[in-house]
Amino acid sequence: VRLSRVLDELTNELGRSPTIPELAKATGAEEEEVIDALDSAHAYSTRSLNATFEDGGDDTLAEKLGVTDTGFEEIEDGSLISAGLDALDERERRIVELRFFDELTQSQIAAQVGISQMHVSRLLRRALVVMRGRIEEMAPRHE
Image 1 (spheres, rainbow, N blue to C red):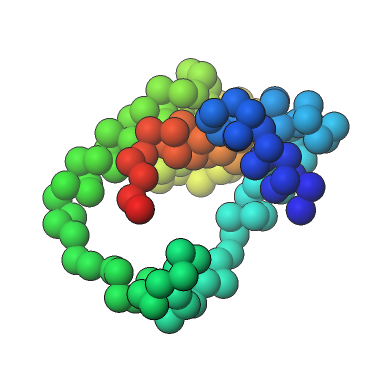
Image 2: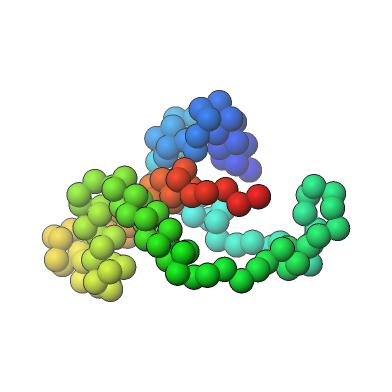
């Protein structure tokens, strides 16, 4: 709950999504703890498709969902993923590419890169948080 409040406050204050180090400093937590908390916060959604929007109207999420040409989405997604990868350092980018493009397991990546599987897990989790932040900054807002 505290991280959520700090995240909102920093977003308003900075005019952008705060970085992991900024969140860690503001909460007095370790960066790894912030990453874990952010992962946990995005792990579920309880919103019903039949729930109305917060604007007071009668429209439901299910009524607003439409069919989109996936070709445009694939191009947009590819561009966003590329931007997310550009936000990473060389080692993080290599680990993400090995995991998701080459489809290696964390253990296989660890052996290839020369670090422990646990460290691969931490680097991968951190890289994905960094990528998510960059993608959220760039993604068009659909309202």
